[in-house]
Amino acid sequence: QVQLVESGGGLVQAGGSLRLSCAASGRFVGINAMAWYRTAPGKQRELIATITNGGITNYVDFVKGRFTISRDNAKNTVYLQMSSLKPEDTAVYYCRADIRSTNLSSYFPFWGQGTQVTVSS
Image (cartoon, rainbow, N blue to C red):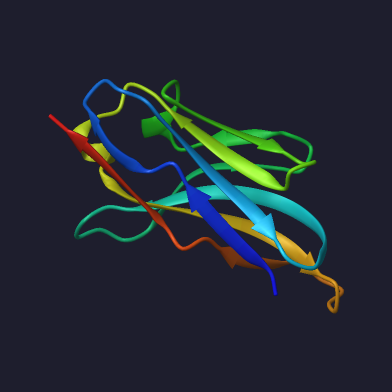
């Protein structure tokens, strides 16, 4: 059974920083793209950043220059370093990884359980 476990959320003041982690565990052959999403109160889930297994990154405009996505392939982990946080960044943050399980021939998306980030003004 493949699992994604997130950590690193919490309460921070505006202008502060947080680092989220998401580690994949279980039986799988490989991990392709990884990504971070968030769901703000009253809003739909939105994509924040993606990273390929080769390290190519993409960001949504409103986090460029403030958030950095990275990964450690040896640890099957993706990170999201968030800086200059704003109250509007308050949301539940989810990681997603496209993983090929041992009993499958294709990659499928797996999701973390979500971690709350609250930014106070």
